[in-house]
Image (cartoon, rainbow, N blue to C red; front, side, top):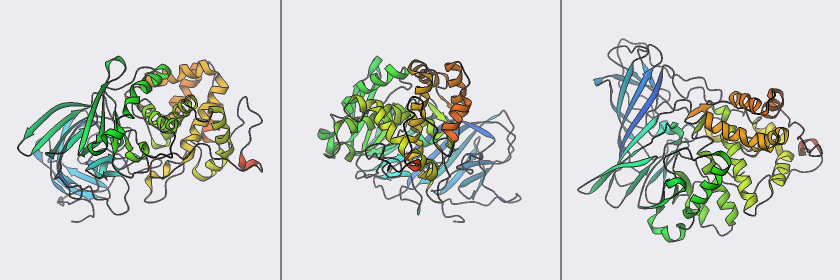
Length: 490
């Protein structure tokens, strides 16, 4: 082993392999230039214990956007056994958290290529690294946000490069495997079964989900005949089953506000694990079981967290951030609809919540940066970008925008946003441009102050609102304690 994470084979007669990246402001070494991934096919063989590596084969179909004599993939927590490019053996080496592949012949711009990597996928955490496989009481689930998919499988680990996925998961009898998308096949052999799932829509690597465990899959139908499937630990089915039954009405609630649900299926994955967060993995949102069994949490609160992850299916999953600095577009919108739903179900009013957020906003900006320019995370804490400024701070931006342009224009903007950028990626500049178009006037100056300013601008319609950082009044918490990525609570 020449690197702590990847077993390598040195390639003779070539310059040393080097890690690359696409230059994301927050994660400069994530992603790789020169190609666009079209499809992933990921085969995983679960050994029946969640403390042993899975045998895996990851096949990547990509289109070359530049002439390449090497291909860099993100991969950092498994042993690479072999690599093929277009059916022929290829050299490979580790460089940082990259797997650098050298095919026998160079690859030309415009061509399509197929890369097959045989490797292991280790569910035991890599040192102080966060994310990737999460070990549950009965198996495994995934939590890849923000940069941990490459701890599970080789990939181009950046949300700007979305692709369709196929998962083929083999597990011993007594286990059930579920992944993003719809089931395509189950092949039962002596002592084991292989489940195949496919997505119909492109997906960012951070949103990949695989559940392996002693689980029950609950099926029901949502609006417009939408197939819904929820995954619960079999041992806790009775107490958990009432919660997923609320999903069809929640989907209808969201559709009334932003339009048709964007994917082929949806469901909740209730994991028997202490994660401290929920996660919007595409078509199968991840929740910890305790969220639904904690008697201290009011029903309206739990339902609003369900809606937060559901709203992400539009904002963050269907429309993904072009860079990680655009994260506010995901979390601000999900927090916005969470707050609207909570208001209807007995939580604090939207105005009260936004006023409290306004009081705290200058402090959030000082600590974590403004919503659209978050400060980089501390070393080893990549999920440190998930701060209050991209949740309630970003929802506050949306509230200010609604106050500025009016409710009708704001609601039209929301629908236009998810329609125009469906199945793609979008940036903060795209949002400012569309908001200006819908409003019929240039909102660049207004929104840039809210999105990039070191201090919070005056709130339209509420000149009396003040920030605690600019007054003697202590800041109140903007929301009840909320499970957020990284195990923290806002």
